[in-house]
Picture (tube, rainbow, N blue to C red):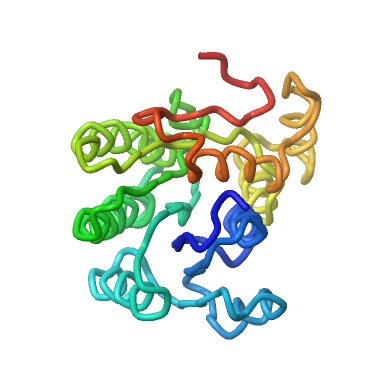
Length: 257
C-alpha cells in the first residue's frame, strides 16, 4: 500500500473526481478526511464500507472558521496531516460583456481564495510536524489558455497553477512537495451543467457540446474521474518526492507541453 497510514484531506469529495480520489487513497491505505459543502451524513453514507478510515465534514472553504475546523478535526481524528488534495471548485460561463461582479467573487472565493488559504493552513501544520508532506492542487486545461465564454473560470485555474509554483518554491526547504493536476474534459455531474450553458450561449442542442468535446480529445473520449486517480496517487506518494512546482496534464492529449 503506497499511502499506508497517511492522512489525506480531500475537498470537493462528495462526487466526481474528489470521490474517486478518496476511494483510491483509501485502497492504498490512507486515512481520509472528505470535505464538501454537501451534507456530511450523506457523504459518510457513500463511504460506509470504510467508515473507520473516513471522516466526513461539511465545510465551506471560503470561510476561515471552516478551514480551521477542517485542519483541527483532521488532527483530532487521525493525529496529523500528510496529504492535501485541493479539489473544491465552481464553474460558470457567460459572454465577457455580460460577466458580473457576483460571479467573479463567487468563483474566485472558492477556486482561488479557498484553495490558497486551505493550502496555507495545512502547510503550517506540516511544517510543525516536521515530516514533510504532499499538496496537490486541481487546476484545469482551462488554466492554460483563455476561452471567450469562460473568462473567470480560466483565470481562477491559471491562478491555481501560479500559486502552486510559488508555494512549491516557498515550502521546498520543509520537504513539502506542491504540485497540480490539469484535467481536460471529464465526465462528471458538473459537465451536464456545463453542456447546458454551452447550449444556451452557442445555440446548440443539449448534449451536442459534450459529444463534440469528447470526440475532439486525441484519445477519443472524455475523461472519467477514475482517469485522474493515478496521477493523484503518484503525486501523493513517495514516488514523487523529487517532483515539485509542476502541474501535470491528465487530459487525453488535449494540451501538449
